[in-house]
Image 1 (cartoon, rainbow, N blue to C red):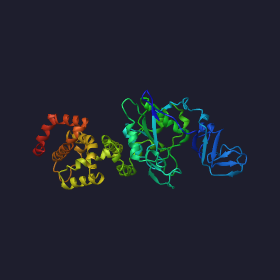
Image 2 (cartoon, rainbow, N blue to C red):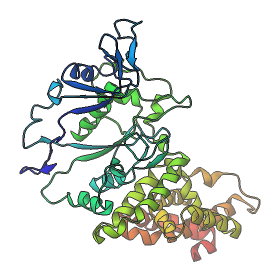
Image 3 (spheres, helix red, strand yellow):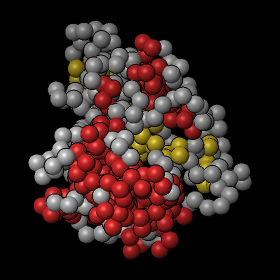
Image 4 (cartoon, one colour):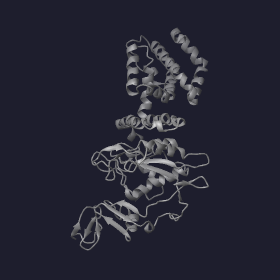
Length: 430
Protein backbone atom coordinates (compact mmCIF):
# COMPACT_ATOMS: atom_id res chain seq x y z
CA UNK A 1 0.00 0.00 0.00
CA UNK A 2 1.19 3.54 -0.70
CA UNK A 3 -0.24 7.07 -0.73
CA UNK A 4 -1.06 8.67 -4.06
CA UNK A 5 -0.61 12.28 -5.12
CA UNK A 6 -4.19 12.97 -4.07
CA UNK A 7 -3.39 11.94 -0.48
CA UNK A 8 -5.46 8.75 -0.61
CA UNK A 9 -4.08 5.34 0.24
CA UNK A 10 -3.84 2.85 -2.64
CA UNK A 11 -3.13 -0.84 -2.52
CA UNK A 12 -2.21 -3.76 -4.76
CA UNK A 13 -2.47 -7.49 -4.08
CA UNK A 14 0.93 -9.09 -4.74
CA UNK A 15 -0.60 -12.57 -4.67
CA UNK A 16 -1.48 -14.20 -7.99
CA UNK A 17 -4.68 -15.76 -6.77
CA UNK A 18 -7.53 -15.98 -4.29
CA UNK A 19 -7.35 -18.39 -1.39
CA UNK A 20 -10.42 -19.69 0.39
CA UNK A 21 -11.48 -22.31 2.92
CA UNK A 22 -13.81 -24.73 1.18
CA UNK A 23 -16.24 -26.19 3.78
CA UNK A 24 -19.58 -24.36 3.78
CA UNK A 25 -18.99 -22.67 0.41
CA UNK A 26 -21.83 -23.30 -2.04
CA UNK A 27 -24.08 -21.59 -4.57
CA UNK A 28 -26.40 -20.80 -1.68
CA UNK A 29 -23.85 -19.24 0.67
CA UNK A 30 -21.35 -17.68 -1.76
CA UNK A 31 -22.40 -17.87 -5.44
CA UNK A 32 -19.70 -15.41 -6.57
CA UNK A 33 -16.95 -17.60 -5.13
CA UNK A 34 -18.39 -20.75 -6.73
CA UNK A 35 -18.61 -19.02 -10.12
CA UNK A 36 -15.02 -17.80 -9.76
CA UNK A 37 -13.38 -21.20 -9.19
CA UNK A 38 -15.13 -23.03 -12.03
CA UNK A 39 -11.90 -23.01 -14.09
CA UNK A 40 -8.16 -22.31 -13.72
CA UNK A 41 -8.40 -23.24 -10.05
CA UNK A 42 -6.51 -25.54 -7.69
CA UNK A 43 -8.26 -27.56 -4.97
CA UNK A 44 -6.23 -29.00 -2.12
CA UNK A 45 -7.38 -31.56 0.42
CA UNK A 46 -10.98 -31.64 -0.79
CA UNK A 47 -13.24 -34.53 -1.61
CA UNK A 48 -13.12 -35.86 -5.16
CA UNK A 49 -15.83 -38.00 -6.74
CA UNK A 50 -15.14 -40.90 -9.09
CA UNK A 51 -16.43 -38.61 -11.84
CA UNK A 52 -13.72 -36.01 -11.11
CA UNK A 53 -15.94 -33.44 -9.37
CA UNK A 54 -14.93 -31.61 -6.19
CA UNK A 55 -16.91 -32.13 -3.00
CA UNK A 56 -16.84 -30.84 0.58
CA UNK A 57 -19.18 -30.24 3.50
CA UNK A 58 -21.92 -27.89 2.35
CA UNK A 59 -22.36 -29.25 -1.17
CA UNK A 60 -24.70 -32.09 -0.19
CA UNK A 61 -27.65 -30.44 -1.96
CA UNK A 62 -25.66 -29.58 -5.09
CA UNK A 63 -23.89 -32.83 -5.97
CA UNK A 64 -25.45 -34.36 -9.06
CA UNK A 65 -25.37 -37.99 -7.93
CA UNK A 66 -26.27 -38.39 -4.25
CA UNK A 67 -24.83 -41.92 -4.20
CA UNK A 68 -21.55 -41.15 -5.94
CA UNK A 69 -18.36 -42.68 -4.49
CA UNK A 70 -15.57 -40.51 -3.10
CA UNK A 71 -11.90 -41.03 -3.87
CA UNK A 72 -10.77 -39.00 -0.83
CA UNK A 73 -12.39 -36.77 1.77
CA UNK A 74 -10.77 -33.96 3.73
CA UNK A 75 -12.41 -30.78 2.45
CA UNK A 76 -9.95 -27.98 3.11
CA UNK A 77 -8.97 -25.34 0.55
CA UNK A 78 -9.46 -23.91 -2.92
CA UNK A 79 -7.39 -21.43 -4.93
CA UNK A 80 -8.38 -19.63 -8.12
CA UNK A 81 -7.21 -16.92 -10.53
CA UNK A 82 -8.31 -13.34 -9.64
CA UNK A 83 -9.38 -12.43 -13.17
CA UNK A 84 -12.15 -15.01 -12.93
CA UNK A 85 -13.96 -13.01 -10.25
CA UNK A 86 -16.91 -11.18 -11.82
CA UNK A 87 -16.90 -8.46 -9.16
CA UNK A 88 -13.17 -7.66 -9.13
CA UNK A 89 -12.22 -3.96 -9.27
CA UNK A 90 -11.56 -2.76 -12.84
CA UNK A 91 -8.20 -1.32 -11.75
CA UNK A 92 -7.02 -4.41 -9.88
CA UNK A 93 -3.96 -4.74 -12.12
CA UNK A 94 -3.15 -1.03 -12.26
CA UNK A 95 0.36 -0.17 -10.92
CA UNK A 96 -1.32 2.69 -9.05
CA UNK A 97 -3.47 0.22 -7.17
CA UNK A 98 -7.05 0.61 -6.01
CA UNK A 99 -8.14 3.17 -3.34
CA UNK A 100 -8.30 1.89 0.23
CA UNK A 101 -11.19 3.47 2.14
CA UNK A 102 -11.40 1.03 5.05
CA UNK A 103 -9.15 -1.30 6.99
CA UNK A 104 -11.02 -4.20 8.59
CA UNK A 105 -9.41 -6.20 11.39
CA UNK A 106 -11.02 -9.54 12.15
CA UNK A 107 -10.78 -11.72 15.22
CA UNK A 108 -12.13 -15.24 15.54
CA UNK A 109 -13.90 -14.94 18.89
CA UNK A 110 -16.54 -17.60 19.72
CA UNK A 111 -17.56 -15.68 22.87
CA UNK A 112 -17.71 -11.90 23.25
CA UNK A 113 -16.93 -9.30 20.65
CA UNK A 114 -19.48 -7.48 18.48
CA UNK A 115 -20.16 -8.43 14.88
CA UNK A 116 -18.75 -5.08 13.74
CA UNK A 117 -17.78 -1.74 15.22
CA UNK A 118 -16.01 1.33 13.92
CA UNK A 119 -13.09 2.93 15.71
CA UNK A 120 -13.02 6.58 16.68
CA UNK A 121 -9.78 7.60 15.00
CA UNK A 122 -6.64 6.33 13.26
CA UNK A 123 -4.84 5.95 16.59
CA UNK A 124 -7.80 4.23 18.21
CA UNK A 125 -7.99 1.90 15.21
CA UNK A 126 -4.32 0.99 15.59
CA UNK A 127 -4.86 0.28 19.26
CA UNK A 128 -7.83 -1.93 18.39
CA UNK A 129 -5.73 -3.90 15.92
CA UNK A 130 -2.91 -4.21 18.43
CA UNK A 131 -5.36 -5.61 21.01
CA UNK A 132 -6.77 -8.18 18.60
CA UNK A 133 -7.35 -11.65 20.03
CA UNK A 134 -8.35 -14.66 18.00
CA UNK A 135 -8.87 -18.38 18.22
CA UNK A 136 -5.83 -20.28 16.91
CA UNK A 137 -6.16 -21.50 13.31
CA UNK A 138 -4.23 -23.89 11.09
CA UNK A 139 -2.02 -21.00 9.97
CA UNK A 140 -0.81 -20.40 13.53
CA UNK A 141 1.86 -22.25 15.47
CA UNK A 142 -0.66 -23.41 18.09
CA UNK A 143 -3.35 -26.03 17.64
CA UNK A 144 -6.71 -26.38 19.30
CA UNK A 145 -9.24 -23.70 20.17
CA UNK A 146 -7.08 -21.44 22.33
CA UNK A 147 -7.90 -17.71 22.11
CA UNK A 148 -4.59 -15.90 21.81
CA UNK A 149 -3.21 -12.42 21.21
CA UNK A 150 -3.04 -11.94 17.45
CA UNK A 151 -1.91 -8.35 16.99
CA UNK A 152 -3.06 -6.90 13.67
CA UNK A 153 -3.96 -10.54 12.73
CA UNK A 154 -0.24 -10.95 12.01
CA UNK A 155 0.89 -13.42 14.70
CA UNK A 156 2.00 -16.22 12.35
CA UNK A 157 3.60 -13.79 9.90
CA UNK A 158 5.36 -11.14 12.00
CA UNK A 159 9.11 -11.28 11.39
CA UNK A 160 10.40 -8.13 13.08
CA UNK A 161 9.86 -6.15 16.27
CA UNK A 162 6.16 -5.50 16.64
CA UNK A 163 6.78 -2.20 18.43
CA UNK A 164 8.52 -0.90 15.31
CA UNK A 165 5.70 -2.28 13.18
CA UNK A 166 3.16 -0.42 15.32
CA UNK A 167 5.16 2.80 15.05
CA UNK A 168 5.10 2.44 11.26
CA UNK A 169 1.28 2.36 11.34
CA UNK A 170 1.21 5.46 13.55
CA UNK A 171 3.59 7.36 11.26
CA UNK A 172 1.36 6.78 8.22
CA UNK A 173 -1.02 9.52 9.40
CA UNK A 174 0.69 12.67 8.21
CA UNK A 175 -0.48 16.09 7.04
CA UNK A 176 -1.97 15.95 3.57
CA UNK A 177 -2.85 12.28 3.79
CA UNK A 178 -6.32 10.77 4.08
CA UNK A 179 -5.99 7.62 6.15
CA UNK A 180 -8.71 4.95 5.87
CA UNK A 181 -11.31 4.29 8.52
CA UNK A 182 -10.60 1.27 10.71
CA UNK A 183 -13.23 -1.28 11.71
CA UNK A 184 -13.27 -4.53 13.64
CA UNK A 185 -15.39 -7.56 12.76
CA UNK A 186 -16.07 -10.92 14.37
CA UNK A 187 -17.92 -13.35 12.11
CA UNK A 188 -17.42 -16.25 14.50
CA UNK A 189 -19.42 -15.59 17.65
CA UNK A 190 -21.44 -18.63 18.76
CA UNK A 191 -24.59 -19.16 20.78
CA UNK A 192 -25.20 -21.46 23.75
CA UNK A 193 -25.59 -24.40 21.34
CA UNK A 194 -22.17 -23.75 19.76
CA UNK A 195 -23.80 -22.52 16.54
CA UNK A 196 -22.59 -19.44 14.70
CA UNK A 197 -24.83 -16.41 15.28
CA UNK A 198 -23.89 -14.82 11.97
CA UNK A 199 -24.46 -16.74 8.68
CA UNK A 200 -21.21 -15.46 7.14
CA UNK A 201 -20.11 -16.15 3.56
CA UNK A 202 -22.08 -13.96 1.11
CA UNK A 203 -23.97 -12.28 3.94
CA UNK A 204 -20.75 -10.55 4.99
CA UNK A 205 -21.40 -8.09 2.15
CA UNK A 206 -24.16 -6.59 4.32
CA UNK A 207 -21.66 -5.54 6.96
CA UNK A 208 -19.18 -4.29 4.37
CA UNK A 209 -21.95 -2.30 2.68
CA UNK A 210 -22.83 -0.73 6.02
CA UNK A 211 -19.16 0.19 6.61
CA UNK A 212 -18.91 1.84 3.20
CA UNK A 213 -22.07 3.85 3.76
CA UNK A 214 -20.83 4.97 7.16
CA UNK A 215 -17.59 6.15 5.51
CA UNK A 216 -19.65 8.04 2.91
CA UNK A 217 -21.42 9.86 5.73
CA UNK A 218 -24.85 8.48 4.90
CA UNK A 219 -27.22 9.54 7.71
CA UNK A 220 -29.61 7.41 9.74
CA UNK A 221 -27.62 4.18 9.51
CA UNK A 222 -27.44 3.75 13.27
CA UNK A 223 -24.44 2.90 15.39
CA UNK A 224 -22.70 -0.46 15.08
CA UNK A 225 -22.49 -0.75 18.84
CA UNK A 226 -26.16 -0.17 19.55
CA UNK A 227 -28.42 -0.70 16.52
CA UNK A 228 -30.54 -3.81 16.09
CA UNK A 229 -28.85 -5.90 13.41
CA UNK A 230 -31.90 -6.74 11.34
CA UNK A 231 -33.22 -3.18 11.23
CA UNK A 232 -29.77 -1.78 10.54
CA UNK A 233 -29.02 -4.16 7.69
CA UNK A 234 -32.42 -3.75 6.08
CA UNK A 235 -31.36 -0.15 5.46
CA UNK A 236 -28.36 -1.39 3.47
CA UNK A 237 -30.57 -1.75 0.40
CA UNK A 238 -30.41 -5.54 0.14
CA UNK A 239 -33.61 -7.61 -0.10
CA UNK A 240 -35.09 -8.30 3.32
CA UNK A 241 -35.02 -12.04 2.60
CA UNK A 242 -31.30 -12.04 1.82
CA UNK A 243 -30.53 -13.51 5.23
CA UNK A 244 -32.46 -15.04 8.09
CA UNK A 245 -32.19 -13.14 11.38
CA UNK A 246 -32.66 -15.75 14.06
CA UNK A 247 -33.93 -14.93 17.52
CA UNK A 248 -31.07 -13.70 19.62
CA UNK A 249 -29.05 -12.69 16.56
CA UNK A 250 -29.45 -9.00 17.38
CA UNK A 251 -27.28 -9.65 20.43
CA UNK A 252 -24.29 -9.77 18.10
CA UNK A 253 -24.71 -6.09 17.36
CA UNK A 254 -25.70 -4.90 20.81
CA UNK A 255 -23.28 -3.05 23.04
CA UNK A 256 -24.26 -5.60 25.68
CA UNK A 257 -22.14 -8.08 23.75
CA UNK A 258 -19.10 -6.21 25.01
CA UNK A 259 -20.36 -5.72 28.54
CA UNK A 260 -19.50 -9.22 29.66
CA UNK A 261 -16.88 -10.12 32.24
CA UNK A 262 -14.67 -11.23 29.38
CA UNK A 263 -14.37 -7.63 28.20
CA UNK A 264 -12.91 -6.59 31.55
CA UNK A 265 -10.42 -9.44 31.35
CA UNK A 266 -9.58 -8.46 27.78
CA UNK A 267 -8.85 -4.89 28.80
CA UNK A 268 -6.49 -5.91 31.62
CA UNK A 269 -4.88 -8.64 29.54
CA UNK A 270 -4.37 -6.32 26.57
CA UNK A 271 -2.77 -3.67 28.74
CA UNK A 272 -0.21 -6.18 30.01
CA UNK A 273 0.45 -7.47 26.51
CA UNK A 274 0.97 -3.96 25.11
CA UNK A 275 3.09 -2.59 27.95
CA UNK A 276 6.27 -3.95 26.38
CA UNK A 277 5.54 -1.98 23.20
CA UNK A 278 5.52 1.45 24.82
CA UNK A 279 9.31 1.66 24.75
CA UNK A 280 9.18 1.59 20.97
CA UNK A 281 6.60 4.35 20.54
CA UNK A 282 7.41 8.01 20.20
CA UNK A 283 6.79 9.98 23.40
CA UNK A 284 4.13 12.06 21.62
CA UNK A 285 1.99 8.94 21.15
CA UNK A 286 1.91 7.73 24.75
CA UNK A 287 -1.45 9.51 25.21
CA UNK A 288 -2.94 6.96 22.80
CA UNK A 289 -3.05 4.50 25.70
CA UNK A 290 -5.23 6.84 27.77
CA UNK A 291 -7.50 7.61 24.80
CA UNK A 292 -8.09 3.95 24.12
CA UNK A 293 -8.56 3.09 27.78
CA UNK A 294 -11.34 5.68 27.69
CA UNK A 295 -13.00 3.74 24.87
CA UNK A 296 -12.75 0.34 26.48
CA UNK A 297 -14.23 1.60 29.74
CA UNK A 298 -16.99 3.82 28.43
CA UNK A 299 -17.93 1.16 25.89
CA UNK A 300 -19.23 -0.85 28.84
CA UNK A 301 -22.46 0.96 29.55
CA UNK A 302 -22.98 -0.73 32.89
CA UNK A 303 -19.85 0.90 34.29
CA UNK A 304 -21.13 4.30 33.21
CA UNK A 305 -24.21 3.68 35.36
CA UNK A 306 -22.35 2.21 38.35
CA UNK A 307 -19.17 4.28 38.61
CA UNK A 308 -20.84 7.61 39.58
CA UNK A 309 -22.26 5.98 42.71
CA UNK A 310 -18.93 4.33 43.54
CA UNK A 311 -17.24 7.74 43.36
CA UNK A 312 -20.04 9.37 45.36
CA UNK A 313 -19.63 6.61 47.93
CA UNK A 314 -15.98 7.50 48.46
CA UNK A 315 -17.14 10.85 49.89
CA UNK A 316 -19.88 9.44 52.15
CA UNK A 317 -19.99 10.75 55.70
CA UNK A 318 -20.06 7.13 56.89
CA UNK A 319 -16.45 5.99 57.16
CA UNK A 320 -17.33 2.34 56.49
CA UNK A 321 -19.25 3.25 53.30
CA UNK A 322 -16.43 5.49 52.10
CA UNK A 323 -13.81 2.81 52.78
CA UNK A 324 -15.84 0.16 50.94
CA UNK A 325 -16.23 2.44 47.93
CA UNK A 326 -12.49 3.29 47.89
CA UNK A 327 -11.64 -0.41 48.12
CA UNK A 328 -13.97 -1.19 45.23
CA UNK A 329 -12.32 1.55 43.17
CA UNK A 330 -8.73 0.54 43.96
CA UNK A 331 -9.35 -3.19 43.49
CA UNK A 332 -10.82 -2.75 40.02
CA UNK A 333 -8.55 0.13 38.99
CA UNK A 334 -5.26 -0.35 40.84
CA UNK A 335 -2.53 2.28 41.04
CA UNK A 336 -2.66 5.03 38.44
CA UNK A 337 -5.73 3.43 36.87
CA UNK A 338 -7.84 4.83 39.72
CA UNK A 339 -7.16 8.41 38.64
CA UNK A 340 -7.74 7.44 34.99
CA UNK A 341 -11.09 5.87 35.90
CA UNK A 342 -12.13 8.97 37.88
CA UNK A 343 -11.20 11.15 34.92
CA UNK A 344 -13.13 8.99 32.46
CA UNK A 345 -16.29 8.93 34.57
CA UNK A 346 -15.97 12.47 35.92
CA UNK A 347 -18.63 13.95 33.63
CA UNK A 348 -21.29 11.30 34.32
CA UNK A 349 -20.53 11.47 38.06
CA UNK A 350 -20.80 15.27 38.13
CA UNK A 351 -24.17 15.08 36.39
CA UNK A 352 -25.54 12.63 38.99
CA UNK A 353 -24.17 14.75 41.84
CA UNK A 354 -25.70 17.97 40.49
CA UNK A 355 -29.04 16.23 39.83
CA UNK A 356 -29.11 15.01 43.44
CA UNK A 357 -28.34 18.44 44.84
CA UNK A 358 -30.93 20.01 42.52
CA UNK A 359 -33.48 17.41 43.70
CA UNK A 360 -33.88 16.06 40.16
CA UNK A 361 -32.58 12.57 40.98
CA UNK A 362 -34.70 9.73 42.35
CA UNK A 363 -32.11 9.11 45.07
CA UNK A 364 -33.11 12.43 46.65
CA UNK A 365 -36.56 11.04 47.45
CA UNK A 366 -35.54 7.48 48.33
CA UNK A 367 -36.24 6.04 51.77
CA UNK A 368 -33.93 7.50 54.38
CA UNK A 369 -31.31 5.40 56.13
CA UNK A 370 -31.57 4.44 59.81
CA UNK A 371 -28.88 6.99 60.60
CA UNK A 372 -31.02 9.81 59.20
CA UNK A 373 -33.73 11.37 61.38
CA UNK A 374 -35.61 13.20 58.60
CA UNK A 375 -35.76 13.80 54.83
CA UNK A 376 -34.04 17.13 55.49
CA UNK A 377 -31.14 15.39 57.20
CA UNK A 378 -30.96 12.94 54.30
CA UNK A 379 -30.76 15.82 51.80
CA UNK A 380 -28.07 17.47 53.91
CA UNK A 381 -26.03 14.27 53.99
CA UNK A 382 -26.39 13.64 50.24
CA UNK A 383 -25.62 17.26 49.40
CA UNK A 384 -22.42 17.20 51.44
CA UNK A 385 -21.42 13.94 49.78
CA UNK A 386 -22.09 15.39 46.32
CA UNK A 387 -20.23 18.63 46.98
CA UNK A 388 -17.17 16.75 48.21
CA UNK A 389 -17.34 14.59 45.08
CA UNK A 390 -17.54 17.67 42.84
CA UNK A 391 -14.51 19.07 44.63
CA UNK A 392 -12.67 15.81 43.90
CA UNK A 393 -13.61 16.09 40.23
CA UNK A 394 -12.72 19.77 39.88
CA UNK A 395 -9.03 19.19 38.90
CA UNK A 396 -10.16 17.18 35.87
CA UNK A 397 -12.15 20.17 34.55
CA UNK A 398 -8.89 21.65 33.25
CA UNK A 399 -8.72 18.99 30.54
CA UNK A 400 -12.47 18.41 30.03
CA UNK A 401 -14.39 21.32 28.54
CA UNK A 402 -17.81 19.73 29.12
CA UNK A 403 -17.01 19.06 32.77
CA UNK A 404 -15.71 22.60 33.19
CA UNK A 405 -18.90 24.10 31.73
CA UNK A 406 -21.09 21.83 33.88
CA UNK A 407 -19.31 22.78 37.12
CA UNK A 408 -19.18 26.46 36.19
CA UNK A 409 -22.93 26.53 35.53
CA UNK A 410 -23.66 24.77 38.80
CA UNK A 411 -21.61 27.05 41.02
CA UNK A 412 -23.07 30.13 39.34
CA UNK A 413 -26.58 29.02 40.32
CA UNK A 414 -26.90 31.17 43.44
CA UNK A 415 -30.36 29.80 44.29
CA UNK A 416 -29.00 26.28 44.78
CA UNK A 417 -26.01 27.51 46.79
CA UNK A 418 -28.25 29.58 49.11
CA UNK A 419 -30.52 26.56 49.61
CA UNK A 420 -27.55 24.38 50.53
CA UNK A 421 -26.16 26.84 53.04
CA UNK A 422 -29.61 27.41 54.56
CA UNK A 423 -30.35 23.68 54.89
CA UNK A 424 -27.22 22.88 56.87
CA UNK A 425 -24.38 25.09 58.04
CA UNK A 426 -21.97 22.16 57.70
CA UNK A 427 -22.75 21.99 53.98
CA UNK A 428 -21.82 25.62 53.58
CA UNK A 429 -18.54 24.98 55.39
CA UNK A 430 -17.71 22.12 53.01
